[in-house]
Length: 141
Image 1: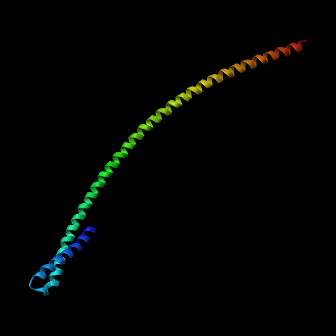
Image 2 (image 1 turned 135 degrees about the horizontal axis):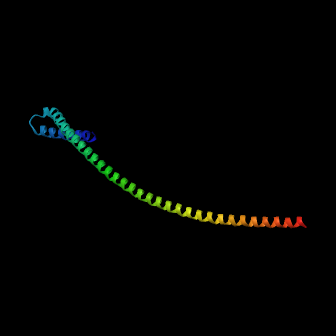
Image 3 (image 1 turned 45 degrees about the vertical axis):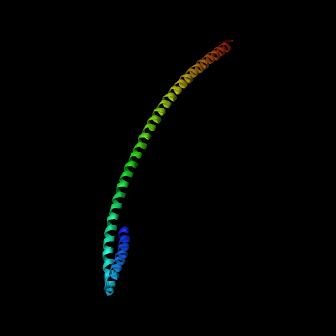
């Protein structure tokens, strides 16, 4: 409605000026205010219609631009989602590989710890056997 109001005012001024100039050039100067008012009314009507049409046109253009921008924005968003999906797949694969490596290392560590525990238990049993033998010899003597 902005353009309609602006064009109506401009049209009224142009219409009044044109009608006044035409009436002044004529032979009846008494009709000047009436002719100017009629010219202003016609000019305002014409300017208002022209401004209304331009308003509608600019709104349609804006709507079209917004649709295009949303399509472009949606395309960029979809591309970002696709890239994120690729990155998350890569991260997931890397995490799985790291977990498998960590599990393998933990298994190796558990085997080593088990071997050391078995060895320590054997040494403790051997020492206990030696102490028992030493105790038997003391008791026997």
